[in-house]
Length: 451
Image (cartoon, rainbow, N blue to C red):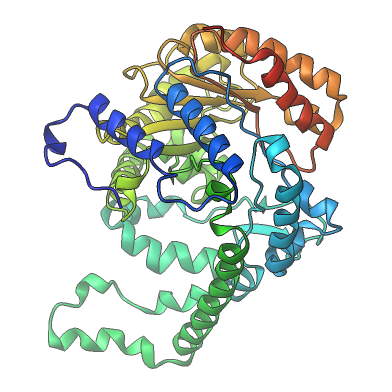
């Protein structure tokens, strides 16, 4: 585990960021690679990423690919197998990687959580293959709802942990419903208060606890399969690991899975002051949770999926008042600690490009889905890493020559000066293998920098 310099508190954000990037560059040290070729390719790839995130020109434009559920399909499996038979899904990914990882310059792993654990928890926020969706459905589907009522803003603002434990979680996990039987745990501060734990003697709570032990067993089995087949595979096979940690815009935290889209849009008009207070509380929680995480010293990147700030979701005035300030507060806190902010701008961000470049050079990376990349390069290219934006629909349905030509144009626009990673705009499900090859061909043919 990396150890911060003793003068960390005196270092500037750019110095902390440089330290984290150097630490990232060392991730292959001591690794047992599967072959000398894998070690050689790893060093080439990680140097490219190091250069890009340092806003320098690497030897060649890096590529970031996702094969989606293609490894499962090629093995005759469905997405549901990743949830309910993870050993089969991991074996399919392993076979796919052995055959195609080097050709695609990417290491594929199916993303899923133990279906048995989700079933035991009675998770209500999503449907997934084998639970609410056909076994062959491509992946998760969010179930929109009001999981926090309008009159609960004060509860969230006053004591967010209590709100989460006794109200929010019982609504989103049916198995945790008995938590409603408890009073606030902060009331327990003397021996006379021990009886506040009396619900532990009740049958519903005891059933809940027994079921949680089963959840633990299911998660242990699932994670064991992942670690046994693919846990150390990426680096050992020559592919750097860039994912660090995960965060969300506070507005998206409230609007996605608490108030819901319709309600939070109404809240901007009906209770703007409460909404702003709640956003500030969630921002503080987000900052504290990440900076107190045990692995925070070993990461350099924080990834955000941005949802409701995209073009068309709200006016610019609403974006400036409700969406951006609390998001920027979170970003500023992490940037101060040397963490690069990787912003996945889902949908289009064309109307936001003029106002989001508010950070020091190298502090932010933007992955764009449907944003005009030429305009993004003009607005952000000197100060930010740019990632994207080959349409996922093109990777799934188009001809390889069209994909290659699209990539050529992207490289021509975004690569000059460095700081660019070629990538789909979002993760495609069941892409054509030949289209993934076309993307790799494009960077190898057009993506090398002249020295």
